[in-house]
Amino acid sequence: MDSKNLKLIARTEEDLRVVSAYLQDSIASVSDIANLKKNKLFLMQLNRFMWEDVEKGVFRKNKRIRTILKFENVLKVLSKNINQIKKNKFLDFLAIETSRTIDNNYEMKIIFAGDSIVRVISEVIEVTLDDQGEAWDTKNKPKHKAL
Image (cartoon, rainbow, N blue to C red):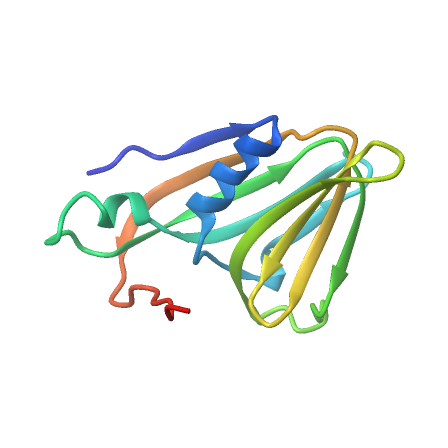
């Protein structure tokens, strides 16, 4: 294995911004999203684009790796513009935004392209990003239009 698997733990809004940056351009299938109400867990498996690898050198190959995003102490999960019947649909990760609610909980919005959003309401920020297995080469490097 060329690169070490990444494991990040977020407990503050700033930590969550770091996790969000590492997840930029990840892809998730609707079938790989789970809300485990009894366990107060929200889980998502994503194929993360390894920007940190690309930035090491011009001649590096583009790589993706499976990663698990886990939210703990979850009170409620809501979604917008995500058809949970279409399990094979892919969602393109853009960012995680965090704010406080009126009752002093945290609302973490997982924002995907196409105005698809998952809102995770939690008492505290306790989020883990954990890469799984080996990375693989990918031909496509995400491109962003300059504003």
